[in-house]
Image (cartoon, rainbow, N blue to C red; front, top):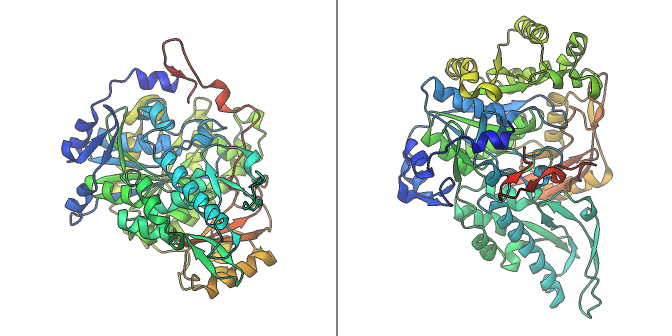
Length: 553
């Protein structure tokens, strides 16, 4: 059976009953049909003095192009904890239409460990990403309208971009204002994918609607002739943008196929933005569950670092344990095994590629001071010999491996890791950030690059150094940094999978995000508008004669 067939064969509980599982009353949910709901802001307010549950972060090794199943493992762990009698709850990101119609497909798990209704969540869901697109583009239209009617603020350079929630490489570079009307000023522009928009980051880092409005007003949109910044609040844009986002700010409640409550909210890209679900969703989940399972984006070098140095810092939280997801195929991939041979048994390939796993373990345990368990997401082609070899290698390092078979067995296939995590969350940690906010921006970037990526050093372009100087002169030097680089490698070269020998990280540009409150450093060739693959998933997605969606996986 396909994922979508498995999901449809499962009878879901009504969402009001899922809410009651975690103590949310019917009057505190706004239903979007039978199986989806928004959670009222009253719920957190009523629980704010309650003790937090344990926070479990799920991250991964550097992935293959199709991902390693972080979301699948996250759901399996949550279901597994319920299987052993624990009050668990999920706090995950919303899928973007870009990957759904692109190369990765959906992002709701797989097999017997899925969040549901999977078609709704993968497509329009409750309209959050559409609202973010509208708010982003409203600000863009207000900027150009202001210029059309005289440019009182004196825009000389505009840094705000329009966005769309699709992978469309044709929009990376565009010319706008070509209608020929007398007062319209043509200019070169660019599009971002919506999940790379600062509005998405703001929604995910806001603590309430008042904070959301303030952050939206603080968004930097351009500079005047004197090089002085111009903010969204100078256009009086934040009020209308907040109106568009008034429902978006509320976390969404759904369920797993085993009826574990799941809060799905926000979804900034992990290689371009900070890659975590919303602070509001995570903090709410910590009040509702004894064990909260949340996910960072892509590999631990990107996702876990940003989760810790940006989200944890801003939210005042920390993980009580970390699940590091690995697959045999990813380890082989980083050991130089060719794609068409990656499903064949290859102990030598595992031995060459295991260094990628070791480095992530070392970062999490020794750099961030966290307790780690490795979750091996088992695939059908994995052999017993390969699994045993990996387990023995990790045992030599004093690291526990848990074989997770959630895809095939549901929560029962994650019983072992659930039991290990209950014990692990009780162990002491020596939690620490990778840098201090008081460090200069250049130093922050260098610390991440050398300590987490293993680079010898950092090469900054002249443009990046000039932008850093300007940002620090404007008084934003104490912002955390968000490095945008490839997810496939510790380096900034997607093809350098094994990362042998010395390499530097190249920072070609710096972007200031005054609304979200961080600085983005663009490394290598990373782009803020992805493209579709030669054969996109969109070609397989359809609707049948019964009106049922097919082809989402």
